[in-house]
Image 1 (cartoon, rainbow, N blue to C red):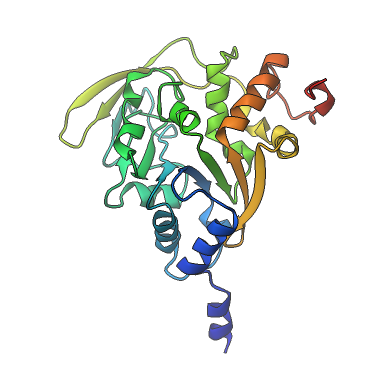
Image 2 (tube, rainbow, N blue to C red):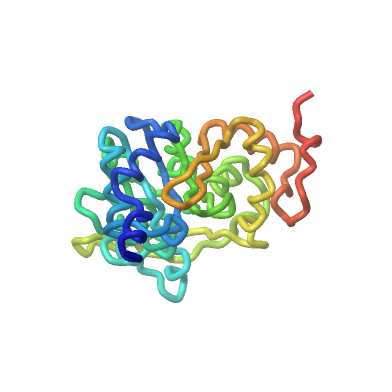
Amino acid sequence: MNQERKRDKMHTKTSLMQQLKEMRIDLEGTVLMHSSMKKIGETQGGADTVLDALSDYMRDGLLALPTHTWATIHADNPKYYVADSPSCVGLLTELFRQRPGVIRSWHPTHSLAALGREAAAFTEGGERWDTPCARGSAWGKLLDRKATILLVGVGMTRNTFIHGVEEWADIPGRLTDSHEPLVTVLADGTEISVPSRRHQGVDWSLHFWKVEEYLIAKGAVTTGQLGDAPVLICDAEKLYVELTRMLRIHPDLFSDNEPLDASRYNEL
């Protein structure tokens, strides 16, 4: 009896796809998801069912997940193997990158993996840039494609796109001046030298939470649910506009955990 009750509470591919529909996620658009499988909860078939639901829902669009390797690829371990280097940002990302048809970008520390329409064009070229989230990289293409960024069971502190906004606004103190001699290794063994600057200073992303309520009030972020997980649904274009304006007013916005003074940023 207890097992039957447990099965009744489990999420399924069908129920997850229904939740995506209720969040009004554009089936033909571009979606990037940061996630916590643990927060999504019990699902029939586990993590693969979550990825099946997302992939099926977005079959006419583009689905992307981060597959970062910044935790393991550095000057002392400089070779990033596109086919083999594990993602350091969660179970779903590690499983997704290995799925048939998924294409992973070649940036040695801040790669993404993508499935669907124009996935090859979306992921192409990341190795040409010496910064984690260059405007011409896939992170910048999220803005060009007016993407939706889903934060599933994680908060704004996991939103790598904000690092991109800071980089494009040329906020000082975010990146090292020097380069690490990193190398991208392709599946056929080809090695590409990718001298790379890294994030530096305080852990700026720990303070990204400060803008969550403000961005919701401005309509750049809405909320939803996937499985048991609360979801922040971010409009990449609106996020970019609001955060760029805020950072121009206060470049040190994310330097500490002081509560946000919204009056400082409200338009007159």
